[in-house]
Image 1 (spheres, rainbow, N blue to C red):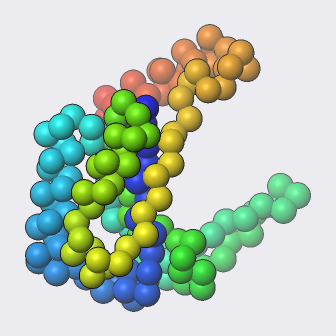
Image 2 (spheres, rainbow, N blue to C red):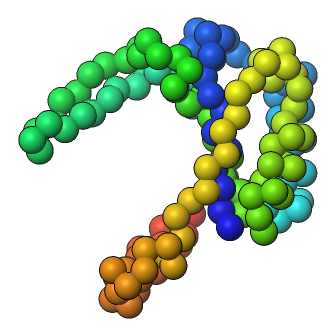
Length: 142
């Protein structure tokens, strides 16, 4: 099972406050532990919403709005993508999140990713094959 660990934004991350050397080391160690355990698929921090844009569609027409965005609690400051055996295992890894982050006050969300089998018969063998080809092309470029 694949899960995304979402690190919610807060006033500090939105203000572009850079992490301390200690926090960078703790996060590096945490990511390294997940890498050694063979569960880490990826992860990055995100720039504040002031650097981003939102694109919304109404009746098929795009509307672009520049950041920053006010609802800090709904924003994402970073993520990790992991592959584990169960939700319980994902929770166990999240409980090990470095306490230095957010001075011990941080909100994380764990969300399962859809897998091919979740889509049922609508995800035909031809569509699965096309997705597999695309994933292989992406992996080859890395």
